[in-house]
Length: 299
Image (tube, rainbow, N blue to C red; front, side, top):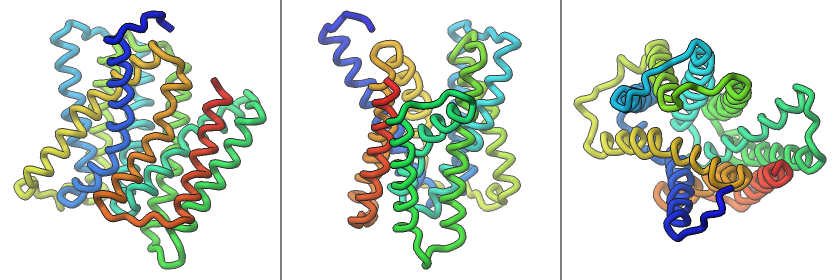
């Protein structure tokens, strides 16, 4: 880690952490408002198509348009597992689940990563196993509290879809780590977004989203929420995240895994009037405790 502790660098660190905490933590709220005006897969298609094209424009302008043969495998894995499935499931489930619950379900991502490493032969330490068990207990308690016998089949399906999507995300992230790095990280990101947008557009055709989309009825607030997801979130968070990985310990950067759900829960409570029962708060605390154990044990 660099030894430079100048005020300018400290300010950059604070800003970068604020970007990943707020950017990823507010995604659920932005999707919630956009879903009032657009079908789910249209939102994903527009967000990643425009963000991908903007990133590609930057690549061309900065003369980084160089791709090697090995890049394509990582591009295809990322576009399918991380964007089409991972983000597509998040937006779809946002129609049926409270933003706070949805954010908590996405904390299963680091849990699946540990489980995959275990299956592949890397036995985790005791505290990682303990954290894994604790976090899964919290998720089960959260779902049983939020989705009782009155919950619809759509809500149960959305919850299970999110958990399955995080498994797909973890598997895709693991496969990408085994591949050579992209020759140009921005080119790799732009291609993942563009191909992911095409896949989301095809999902939208299958789901019937395009038949129900009326772009003339989108309010100015809807366009602003979409712009927020495209520029600060899609094109701002990732560079901040990768810069932090070079500047501070990875365990510190990983705090986003349990800070983002807290941000989403608080925003859902303050702005959307979502209820936070004592049991739900206990389930969140148990889940976050498990994630913290895993992160601290893997420093």
